[in-house]
Length: 108
Length: 124
Image 1: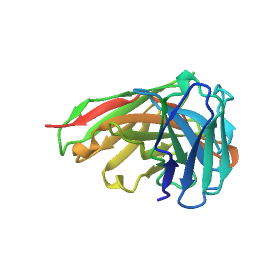
Image 2 (image 1 turned 90 degrees about the vertical axis):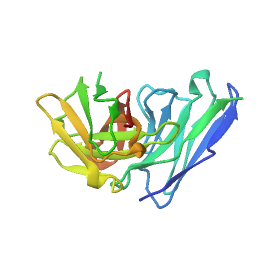
Image 3 (image 1 turned 60 degrees about the horizontal axis):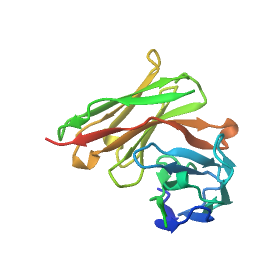
Image 4 (image 1 turned 120 degrees about the vertical axis):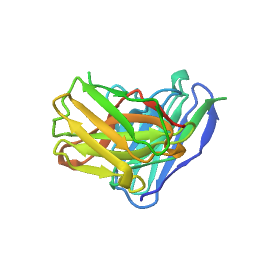
């Protein structure tokens, strides 16, 4: 299985801050990397696919980059509705698809 | 607008079979561009991919669950289902169904629509 490791596991930030979350794969996954946002009690929501493509309807303050084993999700200016948990997911190798452990973004 | 909705018992006894159905509206599960997936999340923990089915009936499963899992499609009802046998307390989780899009040329695969999730508790 391909292991996905996110860092940090949690972070505290203020509205307007720039936030960066990192995801590392245990082997190269090219650009088969997706990012999801999960608010409490809700289903995950797709933000970014193919490492850097913004899903339709997702605000442009979200961006993704990376290729191979190292990837980042950046929120350029954190908004109140962005406080949530973020997951990366590799779609390079199946079975199984695997997710990172999640990064919880909390209010400072 | 595509919508997915999980349904099934919220309580299952240990050693019995967990059965869930996902009803899809706003799109056909017979479309060749999509896979139909089940994903679960224990309380306070991360996401675990269970498996998927394609319109052809082909399936892929997480090796950690493969011996206990069945996923099948019912195109007449536009539904797909999950069966997980011999459940234990470790199978207690919120279960999500999700549509996976395969972009042309297999350049990307991702879960673009999710159900709201249903909590299944395994307890006697």
